[in-house]
Length: 196
Length: 308
Image (cartoon, chains in turn red, yellow):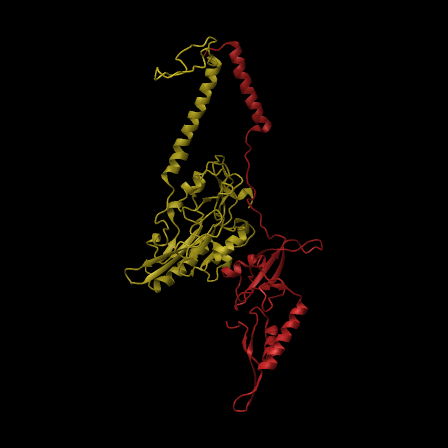
């Protein structure tokens, strides 16, 4: 290949420029991924709890952001089964496995609400007001419908017009207390969902 | 996992570190124990912070209908009428990445480092380097990777590489209530599978066996199947998965030749420019054809090049 002096300098100049750029780091770097994603629970605060859904009562660990320092608003970022819990040994069903969304659901009930007779609206009320209202309604119903003696004249002390639903995730102790309160009122329709 | 644990990397010709030898891990899915509860799907979404769109029912229990960039695992339900026993069998398979020892996605990927294989057997996608070309989908014999419509990058099951790296089991394994999904070293999982297969054979499934196909060098997600002679019964699990020959044709033969041709073209162009120079147009333009083509002589024509 024959080229004149000017052409030879052009070739040399371009070659020098390209190799200088590469040496200066303009060439694509041989990047290596150290970790694609980091373990997200490394320093979270762990709290034990019991799954609120069914009466199996699986153990959970709730992982919240921050180490508990006073300036941190704790927020649950992950929930999974408690491997040391004898009931489930770490496993969770699809409902339990999705508890994080249950906790953060916009539809979650966070405070007592009342829909009074004739009203279409739910109204937020305080706990004291709610408990007082429940107590009044219970007393009124019990006074009206309590059955002291049956047709044969035997003492039965039944209250059949009100039922009680309690939680499956209660401990034995709170279950015992619930049972005592409900039965001492004479209530028969009572479910603690403790059937497993 | 550290860079020393990456033993294969897409579109990379420099040798990868091979010194560290951690044991290979494996996930074993026992289709005979699976009840199709989808806890694994939920646990996967929770761990990986994925919330797929709510779709519509397509007439089966498959929910969602297919894998997506935000659903990395999926229970696939198949109904099979067994001609020998006359029984209707409901075959449920947890679909997702198989973490092949010879990954077709990694072989097909043109972007350096977008797909890596760790020494423990996990095949992982690095979306940072993904160019969204979709070759991994072509390369995958199991049709697993999906391109996200949000960021045009490919996603799939990671075998919870972030959990496994710190000594935990994948999220789906931990949650499985029936113990249909188990996790451990590959050897232990093969031993576990062998026990299950003996049990299944005693219960009348003469063809029970382990699905760990050789066509992709074995997998790090294995199945215990009641009908290991017919994997395709399980919602189209490939009977003999293999990497498409197009992948080796493109990456093995066509790509170097094409690169050579491209390089030669650039070089030829450069030397043509230096030796011959650019094509110059003469100052005096050739009048050539008239600008306006006259079809009907009776129609008045305005030619902008002619003065009125």
